[in-house]
Length: 131
Image (cartoon, rainbow, N blue to C red):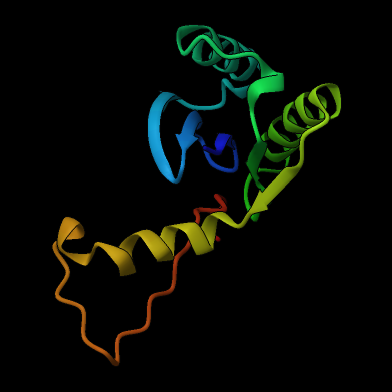
């Protein structure tokens, strides 16, 4: 039974999820903006406590590797590295653009899309400043 703590801080959304055997079992999320430094460790602590888990009981920590907000990525990766180092568990880097594309391709009906074999998906993250 694999338990993975998942951290996403590459955009304005700060989220932490717990995955068991590939299924999300619990999560914490804030969509109000750049509050990652204030909320991330609180979310992690709350998620582990409410699921009666210690960091040493996790099998890995998955964290977004970018592209995305430079500061947000530093906060997420720093927290992940700290947990992994202290608990002696591996860290998994996840590309948020690939994750976004996979979500749409695997469940197009959820997004109101009729997928054709010739369709190409180009996930994008707002870089601000009209970029």
